[in-house]
Every structure is written in structure tokens, then in C-alpha cells.
Length: 337
Ligand code: NAD
Ligand code: UFG
Image 1 (cartoon, rainbow, N blue to C red):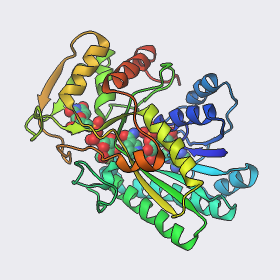
Image 2 (image 1 turned 90 degrees about the vertical axis):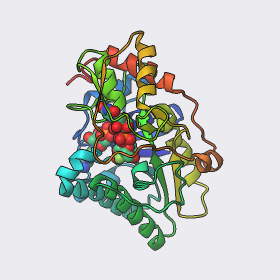
Image 3 (image 1 turned 135 degrees about the vertical axis):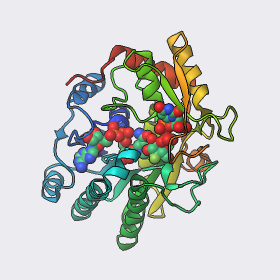
């Protein structure tokens, strides 16, 4: 297939691009580099050995999106583009609603006009709201912040479009906590500014960019008192997109919803210790107060994806840390400007 990857220069998109090319698909990237750097594309071309067409514009621009679909043959879309920082979304709600919903409107409109009927969408465990323990796909959706609401709303918009256009097929993939990097160490997560997420923060402590890890609370009702999450290796996550793309071709129902997680939870301290094993020495940390809005425990029930997509995770928490550390060591300041 010729697959348009929106947000293909971003963290999850870039890893998915490599797997798409390896599986024999052709890739077209659209990204405005709001949260990524053009040099990612050079790394992707080196990894894949292919020239990758890149359209650098804001997907909210309907005219440019229309032109892209008019000029490029496209069989399917994987839609990663969006803003994703929970805290920032509380400060900038309009920007989040505009960007995340606007990119989806442009893409789906252009798909309809050009007869493109398959889309894989980046949703999130955040749509389970406060109810994230052993989450199954039939659980009611909800949110606790504007970012989360954009995911709930985008899922609903796609369901409504599918009712109005019975030929369309949508995969809603609810990711748990993506971490890790490509085994080459040439692509990985490159947060701009202070990392919000645990593993990128630990990686920056390990490489000397941050002094110590703040552990947000050790008084949760969990194994060791720290928050537990379902960390999924980004390579397993990328493989889930390829499986969903294949599934869209044979699906009777218009919308499929799948959790992409391991089904296991790891605490903050367990993750810190796994990273220490990867690095080979202890890393400084301090326990501080809880972070507002955090749930104690979040993990997927991935059985539906295992059964229906023929997909399962294969990589351990230690693999996630070893691969993150390889990437961080080789690129202490992330991708070049
Ligand atoms: P990312 O920020 O690394 O990648 C997103 C890419 O989209 C970036 O390259 C950015 O420049 C681009 N983009 C943003 N707005 C755009 C616009 N208007 N037009 C064109 N390009 C635009 O994020 P990621 O971690 O790779 O996440 C990808 C998707 O997965 C997002 O939709 C995110 O909400 C979702 N998701 C991520 C996580 C996570 O923890 N990383 C968890 C659940 C869901
Ligand atoms: N944590 C720390 N110190 C840090 C960062 C995180 O102790 O410096 C802890 C958090 O309190 C939490 C765990 O590490 O217990 C994981 O935190 P992350 O920020 O890495 O991940 P979250 O589960 O909080 O957030 C993720 C995605 C969001 C999504 C949310 C809910 O990043 O996009 O899951 O599904 F909204």
C-alpha cells in the first residue's frame, strides 16, 4: 500500500515508517515539525534506504491537504499528527482542540473526496479517564483534561463519519505508555524542553542533562507505593499499526477499537531500577509529592488486539531501557537541528 503517515517525523510515527517500508509499503510523510525536527527524515532515509517524500505543512490547512491528496496516490492513512502534552493542554485548551480536531477534519475530508477509505488513528489510554486498571475496549470513554477530550472527541467523530460513509474503515488504537527506541540507536524520543514523561526524564538524568528524577508520590495503593503503568516498546507499538492496517482490509464492521499494551504494569521505582541495570549504575532520585491528575495504576487488557489483530508485544521492560539508553547515549541532545 501507499500509506500517508501524518506526524511521521514524530516519535511513534518515525518508528512506524521504518516498519512500513520494511514490510514493502510505500510511505508519504506529512508533518509541520511542530514537535519534531526535519533531520529525523535523514535518519529515516538512512535506515530504510529509501527516499521518503515529505510534505511540510500544517494539516489544518484544508487547501494544502486537498492538494496533497490530488497529487499523491494514497491507499491508507495513519494519523499520528497532534499535540500530546497533558499539562500544556490545560494551559492551552483552544490550541489543543483546534490542532487535534482540525488535523482530523482536513484528513478525513480529503480522504472522502479522493476515495481513500482506510485510516488508523492514534488514540490513548487516556480515554478511559480515571478507570485505567485492566482496561477493556468496551469501557465507557471519558477524560480528565483537554488533551484527553480531544482523543474522546476524535474517536466519536470517526465513528460518526463511518456511519455516514459505510465504505470507510477506521482503526482506533488506544496506546498505553510508549517507550524505547529503534535498536539502531539512530531514532528515538526527543522531547523538547523538560520531559513530561518518566522514561525520557530518567534517560536525561542518566546522560547528565538533569540532576535527579523526581518520583511523584510513593503513597499510592500499589506494590511499592509509586504509580504503575503499562509501558510498551515503541517497536511493538509500531508493529500494532501494521497489524491494524492489514485488518482494515478485511473488516466487516466500519470501526475497530484496540488497546495496544502489554497487560502488565511496572512501577516508577521498578522502571528506574531497570534503567539503572541498562546504564550499569544507580541513578539519583527524590520522592516528591503526587502530580495532579495522575492515576495510581494503568494497564491494558490487550486480549482483543491479540485475538483480532494477531499481534502481541515481544519486548521486555529491560529491552525498553537498553534501547532507550543506546539512543540517548548516541544522541545526548536528541536529533541535530
Ligand atoms: P510526537 O509529538 O512525537 O509526534 C507528533 C507529530 O505530529 C510531530 O512530528 C508534530 O510535528 C506533528 N504535528 C503536530 N501537529 C501537526 C499539524 N497540525 N500538522 C502537521 N503535523 C503536526 O508524538 P508521538 O508521541 O509520536 O505521538 C503520536 C500520536 O500518538 C499523537 O496523536 C499522540 O497524542 C498519540 N499518543 C501518544 C502517546 C505517547 O505517550 N507518546 C500516548 C498515547 C497516544
Ligand atoms: N513520573 C514520575 N516522575 C516524572 C515523570 C513521571 O514519578 O518525572 C511518574 C508519574 O507520576 C506516573 C508514571 O511516572 O506514575 C508515568 O508517568 P508518564 O508521565 O510517563 O505517563 P502517564 O501515564 O502519566 O501519561 C501517559 C501519556 C499521556 C496520557 C496518559 C494517560 O504520556 O499522553 O498516559 O493515558 F494522557
